Image (tube, rainbow, N blue to C red; front, side, top):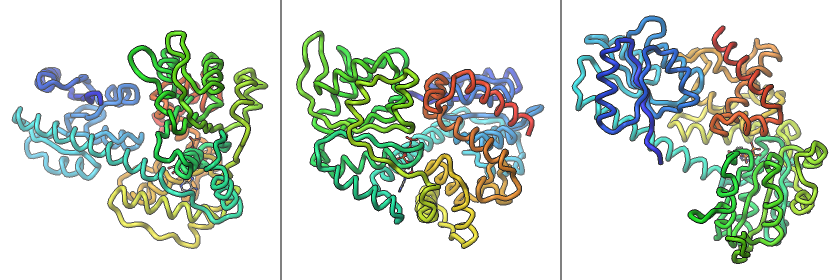
Length: 434
Ligand SMILES: Nc1ncnc2c1ncn2[C@@H]1O[C@H](COP(=O)(O)OP(=O)(O)OP(=O)(O)O)[C@@H](O)[C@H]1O
């Protein structure tokens, strides 16, 4: 794990310099900012692990910075430096989710201890979230509708057979969950399950990541004897397709011009749009399509299984409540109706987000600004607002997943990169105007 970067924000240049010197001397990577807006603007790209900010600053102060970070959905611990006797503000900062606060003049050792503690908390939180995600992905598909029952039956039938399968469905329909189920119910269950997210492969060096190089084994050889899940294969760069095809045909990876050992893995793939479209657009090779598309399983979108939406929502409420140590909210009749009436273009991803917000009570008279109100459970917003909100969220989610790589994000979202850049600029302007 790389060392987290620490942002230090203080409008007093001397203070800033001494803070940065102190923290850097303790071995942390730091970046200095003379004002909060500059720090906020640098967050998406630099992804700091901790922000240490002065409370009182002209323009945007430390509290406003905290609120803006929450508003933008960044879960970064913030330690606030307060003036002597500034208890009220310190309490407000803690209420808004600050990790800790320190009264000035601070003691250098104490400051470093607070930083170390905050970084440990961040690491532990990330680890818990990772384990919870993994646990969630080990679950079963929830849903009692006929399409879900049929899906479960197809998966149970296909799991033990040694055939490759492609899972088709919109984003968030549970393709990864289904792939894991196929693996778990197969005789390969104890062998590795390796995911290759085709959309986030780097432009440079993707071959080494996939096939390995002299130094490191690639992802594909790691799947030996197990299951290789080619997630979002419809976004795989054209240049990688011939070599992948060869590997899928031989189930071997060449090493230094020689055939490698037989790897004997099973291939599962997923796509959110018909590969025939990608072929027609010249983005996907037909021969690779025939190699992987023998058995296709369709996953229903939520709007096709409205009866299952409350069930799934209840499931996500339970998970979010456990994750945040909160009580699980009850679902009312009206909630069910609203949930079933929504279109859910992001499917389970979107539903999960709304459940999380419901558990955290965001947008319900708390300290969090209205942008956090769950769109489908709120009234008063126009359809255009809801679509714009959802679009901005989805772009942020995909960008996050692609670590800010707009080319990869544009590929996943199925829009030209220039359109994506326009949309990012527009949603940033919207946030500024709000
Ligand atoms: N029917 C379901 N029952 C329980 N959990 C589900 C179901 N469908 C989706 N989920 C959960 O919703 C989240 C999104 O599902 P998943 O990642 O499998 O979707 P996906 O189709 O692979 O999405 P993407 O195309 O964006 O990769 C996961 O946390 C998954 O566990």
